[in-house]
Image 1 (tube, helix red, strand yellow):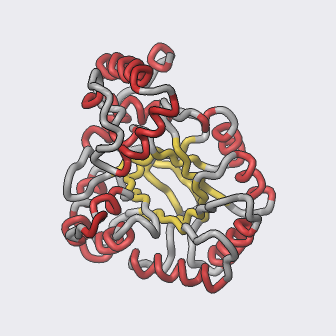
Image 2: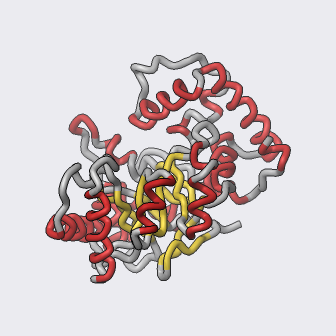
Length: 308
């Protein structure tokens, strides 16, 4: 079965599983360097499998550069969608700031038009976040951006943006069987407004996998990746290691019934929630790939017993 697709905006159709490139920053931390050409070439198996949509940001290390090299040199003309983010410093934002951010992203991505630029506000206490979004609207009208998205907007502020006339097509947020906050108000509201939720953290940085089933509680101060450090906090906030093991056992039972990995079931559960347009699965390009397991997300369906 192929990878289903969904239209986020006119002229912007994405695969319902997006490949997240945030781990490039992790691979490059502490002064480490990444072979950019090898990383770009490592995107090809994803595209060949129908996973044509890649999510990145201005602060994900060399992610935009890698995606630009793929589109320009590895697979020129390939039907890929490159979604990025703009995360400005808190405070006032000028039209020149927006132009500079868009120019930089276009240069790194080697494109004239950004498929989707997702805006992140550090704080909503400063109402100038809405000014920044209006400047993005102007860039959209000028043809520099195909569509505008946001990241980590709660229901109230997404409502403000939409009521203000900002044409938001997506909201990238945390979503998993552990972090189900989006299922109460945000999901139904986004669905009613035609805003697609793009959920990250669906496998909690790898914690939702067979590797951790029945495993002792890790040393939280000695984890391998930034993702594990981040989602370890989620697990502890949600109740701790023992309750988490109960969730893993339930996921394992469902995964065994369907003959797929735990991570595949965890991501499929998120994908089935109202308002969710896609889930973002992280990739450590040139190091590991889970293309086959990701594709299996659409080889089965969850029934009511599975969800219970």
